[in-house]
Image (tube, rainbow, N blue to C red):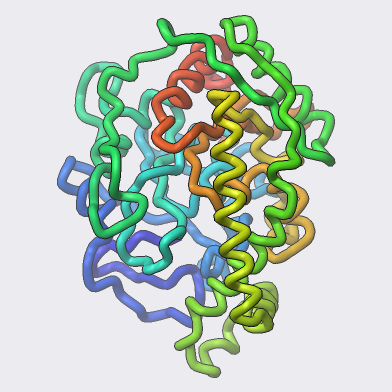
Length: 377
């Protein structure tokens, strides 16, 4: 996702959009700017955000300071600024936030006409930076409060107003019931670190129970149709000459999207609704769902990572189901592999359940030392 800022390029990382300039600010940037935020730059987005590694045929590769060979969460990890409000699709948020904290949910975005489209999201080094105020009590321009809130014309901006006031955890909250979902194919190094973080939550009083993942069966089949058709529709007005500049992986994804019939797309949307209801039903018995962010350590920058690829289907098996359903999910760093690569724990809550996710993030942050670790730049 690329957020429009008036007068700046709006290229979506694609040479086919070179020269396009945003005429107005997106509502999220309007609110951040009004709260005192200063735009110092934008990071690379993959072409039309069809991949989960940050390489772009227009702008090149952004690398991770923990290892220049892997895909990044560069700005927050490198501390280019103290409160970095990074904006991207929610799936990407959790993937790059293995070294940081992100909470995708209820951030209005009115430039898209898709009712289930991804929400802009904040990415922060510390969980408290996602909330209203800094530790010294000053206003935080990158907070959930400033950029979130009611916008009646958008699905993600309507309904119950967002406010983190009073969400001062990590102490004093009821013991949450956490359903632990272990996807197949999780790398042992990832599983070990995730289990350790969950153990800390158990020591703090959380009730952990294994969660059968059958309710997510078929999620990728839905996601592949919705994502491919969405990308194909998004670029339907791009000229043939401009299409010639597309990367091979994006060209293949668009072609795949054009191959689906209207009946197949409608069936996927109906299946999406059933998936939403299945996830909602889990929260009758649990307060939070816990999973690894990815089944593998961070990806190499040249890894195959198109959302239409089998590789993506396997490594992001705990991400795209909740992209489809729109449930709030937070990524919390939970340690490093023996090779020094960051790993993240994902916690998913019911709709309007952000406060509990922030409380649990605060608890884990207060009991671990990962926040003090720095890359060698």
